[in-house]
Length: 79
Image (cartoon, rainbow, N blue to C red):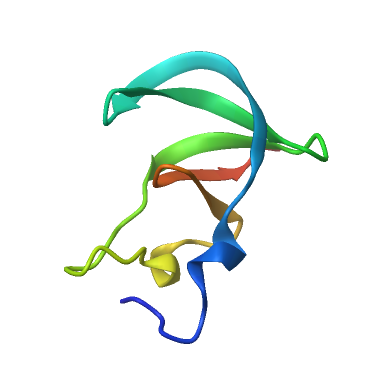
């Protein structure tokens, strides 16, 4: 389900750098096992974000602690 009231921008991480091995590719671009944001927080790859029939990101399907990194990658806070 896509929320019309919650902008997907609220769920985006601006990853400053990648870390760890490449665990796959999406649209020809590598998927890093880890990303680090500008504050130094680390996140690990858990999947690809769902989209509805119109191509909108389904932010309501994210679990607590999960964030989207462009393009459509889902990362969770690493312990």
